[in-house]
Image (cartoon, rainbow, N blue to C red; front, top):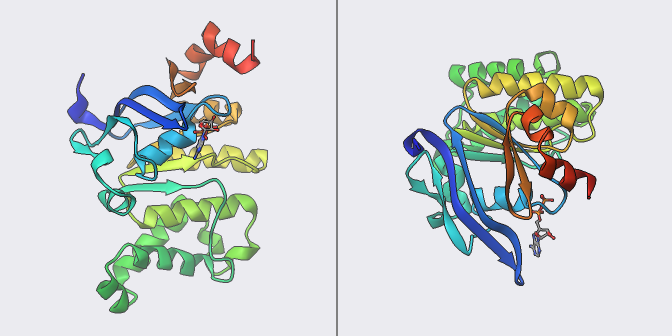
Length: 248
Ligand code: ADP
């Protein structure tokens, strides 16, 4: 296996909570530049997997390699973020009383050292980067609106934009389509595909219509390890996947 070409390689990762195995010898390889959808029933271990990647949870066993060589289990949360791994949680947490533009500027500033933040002047490059992000996140017409006045879907996009402002190599996105209208869900799939042209992306998602729209390789987790992997059609035809989802 060409692990040096991988953005993420989980090798035999186990996590127990009071003897209960949330992750059970989980192994997974993701190529650089790949977007991967992670699905699986409640309790399958999806959140725990994200927690292990971001350093929030330390595994009892196993290793997590970033870009083929850096073992993330040896790093803490802050340094993993600095290495270029950004995570978006399900609930949007934008600054509601600030404009869309200001939210993005704050996120850009946050990526800098304390000194650089103090010395921050609005630069051409920063404005340019914000314009790019506004375009990617479909918020160009809303830059001067207060974030609090955006729709739920637009808030999610803004938060994805704030993540992009931190210039991560790998984005972890938790249920981006939750609570969205059908139109927003479809638009979110296009938006993520745009981002995936230049970034590696892990998407945890329940909405199968959305996963179908993404059209990417799917990993099905069950009881803390990989049950199946492949296209959505392939894994949907897998008997064990059907059993797990229908609870038989
Ligand atoms: P998913 O995100 O796929 O729904 P989780 O990773 O949240 O699954 O959870 C996997 C299992 O681990 C669940 O049974 C959950 O109850 C358990 N679990 C997760 N976090 C903790 C924790 N901090 N303490 C105890 N049990 C936990």
